[in-house]
Image 1 (cartoon, rainbow over the protein chains, first blue to last red):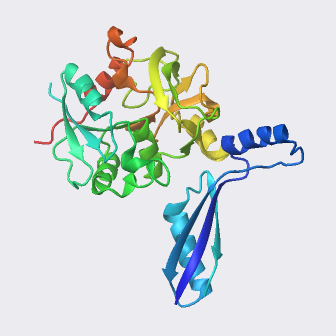
Image 2 (cartoon, rainbow over the protein chains, first blue to last red; image 1 turned 180 degrees about the vertical axis):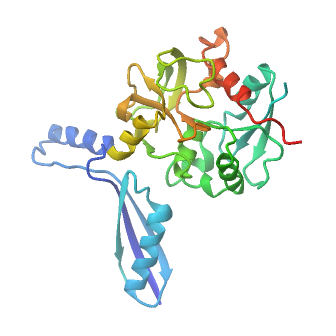
Length: 83
Length: 225
């Protein structure tokens, strides 16, 4: 089966995210005073052939560990979208 | 003395000729190594110069580490061969696992291109020959992702093992511990964000980079003929 997978790559907790903090400092200028913990990352979407959704997730998590994210500074959140 | 230095070119590398000129000025014999080749040939030292290898796609250095030449660089480094990664080359070395940590966007979110003062924190490495801890150098930086970061345990280890090669005297990019360059445990692999090849003549504003490249040449392995 072919699965559509979404991967969110975000800076790890505790790692400075200058893009996020810049946006966070800017939001009050538009009156959004209540926003916090803004973090900017990237989204990668791909399709993968696998026997099950769990298998698809396992394959993509392996991709993330070894290539798509840098575990020193980033977390990857894998979401299998379709079956 | 003839020191053969291989300077790697990836698609997007742009500092290879400055580096080659600087090395040749010092009496070395530098040549370009194409990233798609798996054999570096008979070289005594390898430099991974600055630029934007593979367009910095995904992350700086993330694609470059899959180039065939990088297997040869790993083997060369494992055998004690001197390897210097400058700027993007430093990023490639971290992504390739030859140096710990990572380089993220500058804390001020600005591309920085200017002279910086750095200080030798360790000379037990291939760029430290003839230098003393505490020596101050003016060497330009030219980067957007130069903000060095690593796990706390890694930082402790780097300090304990005397592997922090340079610190900025006035941290420009948010790097942890003001780190501008580090080495591997053995000291034969060094990564640094400042560009020593751009500080090789007073016409360029500084010649403080010369001694680093001279050190690399002097510590180079004897030709294996």
